[in-house]
Image 1 (cartoon, rainbow, N blue to C red):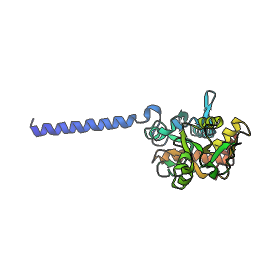
Image 2: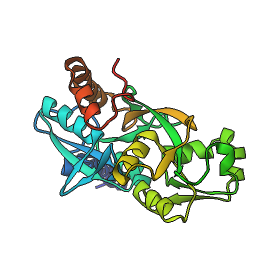
Image 3: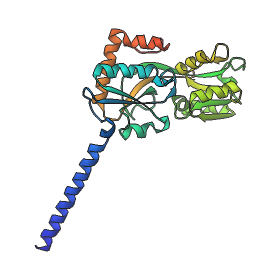
Image 4: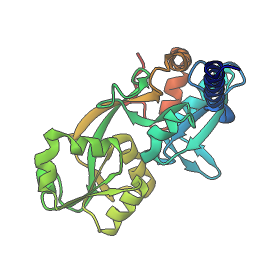
Length: 274
């Protein structure tokens, strides 16, 4: 065989091998756990990534994961004929989990503001505020009173994003310390112990924590420090799956199921129903 012909065959063989590898990787991407970057059929798995320490949106109750967002996801999955998989994740790693196909969506009090171009978003469904929570007897009534105080916030949270914004620099510079904690359960225990002076937290989470920990212990500072909206985050470009989920959510709003679930978690004043 002429040398140039042999070289040509080697090139064709290498190209075919490379193509086979690409197809193999593509077929493995997300399929093993039932996730995919596109529309889903009946019987498919719908895997939702969430922070298991973010009540009332997602948290553990006994042996099950519950919360407003997880209840919404369960209802959507039932209406679509999907198998819901509740996948607790390290919220700091949410982008990796979504982009790798480990989860189909990030659905857990997920703030749209400031991330508009990073994901394919559902329509906003909750109006949220970031507030400061203090001990009831601390005498901290305004943002000016936070000067020289230790303030806690959850790592990679909407509260942290609000505090890191340019317009918050003067306020944050007045703190003695801004400390990031792994979750808000940790933050409230630290505040209750007296080791911190305030927490920057989503108002829905704050109200839930105050209700669980008893009346008279904590105060929510008014007015809110920051306002924002929650949405469901899908992998960039996955409009097909987003549209399927929104179709069910629209039907749930129409028949009252959406509001019924909001009332179950005390969020009826925060949800967006139009």
